[in-house]
Picture 1: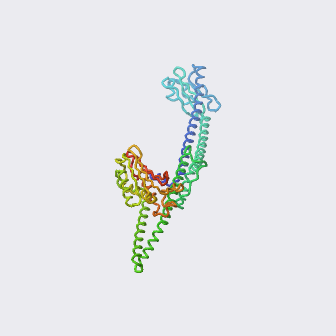
Picture 2: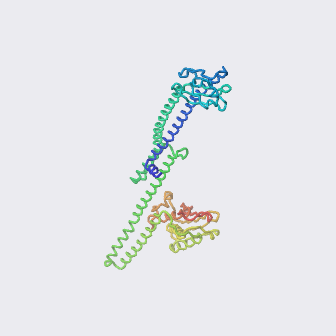
Picture 3: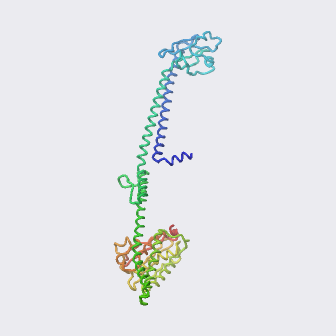
Length: 473
């Protein structure tokens, strides 16, 4: 069994399918030929047996008062009538026992005595094969008839040779058809394998498997075609993932270049501190610390975004109302020139959702910081929390700044994307991307839109407390 399993693993799938299909068709061909041979042999011998029965019936109709002995004795020739002889039940009372042409056995005497039914047997007559039929005749007598069976045996032999030739041709044809069908049927699999091998060798995720012409409908397609479609879809996702990874690395390199250059400049200035005035050293030191904080924050954001999934801390039942109040209070301290107007619906006070408090606080802080950054001096940021246990829990954050241009709306949550109006403001373009990732991990939906009357409006929708399942793993 182990050797057979090793053999199967070493053989290509095409060879195994061809062998299996050929073996199945060959077995069917052999079975059909064997059945046909059995039927032909039975019919030929049955016709001979019927002829013998007719001879006995004709003799019984003509004369049932014949004395024991040979009636016809010319069956040594193919064209001669059947050999016929009458045999009595008692061997002792048989005066012609020595002159019989056909073999007389104890079974024949039993048939004559009506202690046994008629029967067939194969015998030799004048050195030739013959078929003999022994049946009851008159009272105390049996009749034996025999015909040469050379023609029947020759017909059976020719039928066997013909069926063997047909079976052999069927086996060969089955092998050829099995190979052709396996090669044709597995052609998409071969293309899939070749594509996978090329991707592994070239690392080019842009390769695709050739599909039959026409749009893939998913209906009426065979399993191999659906496999090829699924493989192409997987390759598309892989290509997008690789492109996103390369874009992340390129964008990160671009974003890190400026603060690293500033860090190096300030570090070089501080290395020549004896040439600087105290005010210059203070400015260089403050700039160095500021750039270090920016680089550290940028690197931490990149690490969290590149992880592409939430960490695995224990979940807690988080009260969104209390969390929003805390985050708004912290944002008010961080942005003293911005007025934060918080409205909490009464039904949200006692609501609780499963989640990671620190991650949810980071999401809200990013939204509030983004709104405060684009708000005009003294302009309000409106924060509203509504919902119920049987409805969606919705948080809206609106500012009264310049808003989001229509052409920028599809890219607001992309990594490192910064609209033309925001490029002069501090930030790296990762805050909203991180907020979207945290929201998706908590089965929430975060969207951005242009607010009526100006400004930007962000909507964060959480599932109800009964259906929330916590952040995805």
